[in-house]
Length: 87
Image (cartoon, rainbow, N blue to C red; front, top):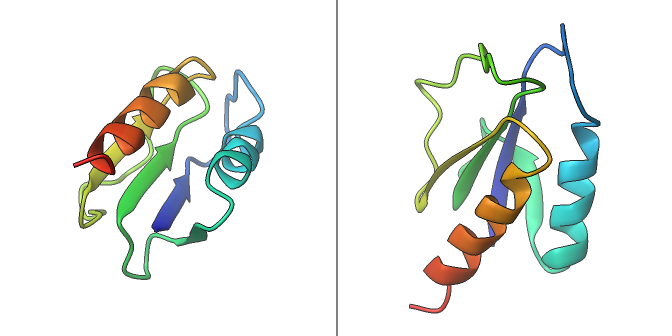
């Protein structure tokens, strides 16, 4: 599985955005994490706050795109990925 990660510019982060990627590495140790410019299964857009002004209109993963705006969104991301991969 490949995750393409795109971060916001970090102008007003409300949480440690890199912890989201660390959790991905822990929960999916065999996954490859790349930039969104390389083909990937899921695009993970990591915004530092609820404004989520990061531009991601042109970013698409084969299985979808998930927007993370807070640490709580990681649980949603996890459920989506696990549900998709049980099919």
